[in-house]
Image 1: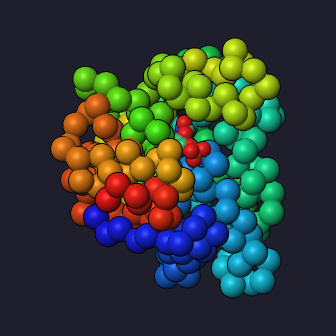
Image 2: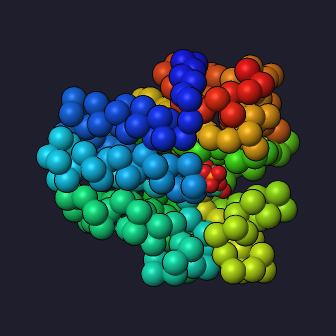
Length: 241
Ligand code: GLP
């Protein structure tokens, strides 16, 4: 794992955006694995700026997102499809037909998961997968557990994660209890992985990911087995390294 420590969140966002921009410049048809949450918002703002200045072109880019809440439609303000449209896709020259997010309203969840993995395979896999990390070490919605599922699957959210994500909803009761998520196997298949984390609340998880023992109880620690991971963290998140 290559670890880059930045002074603060702004610098982290710029460094991460530059990594992404280089991938797109090297391969205009890049397949980008994208993430939601608070962490990538600054990076997305930088990418929008670069796109508006004509420095990067998304017209041939395809994106594949990690996860989606079950039961929220794409126009629900807290759905991850809405987040992606609102935070990035509506502001760049991407063809929305080339943006994939699991469908949280799918009638047949098993089928949706199978089709999602088949779509990623058909695209030839992701060139880069962007990840945030949960306070408990989860990535996407792969929560700490005694075993982890490889492919895209339905999962329950832990109380920790429901509490952490409640900040985006009016009340904690509105946070969905289940989600569709890419599995660890799918994430590990990406050619490159970029993890971003900011703030002291992530310091324990960052330490577990970078130097803890590899365990399904700390899902991010599994990334130690991938050969091209760049971890970009600010000084607060790097505190325990
Ligand atoms: C959520 C998402 C993850 C994200 C994590 C951290 O539960 N499913 O993909 O990485 O939380 O979020 P944040 O960046 O807001 O701290």
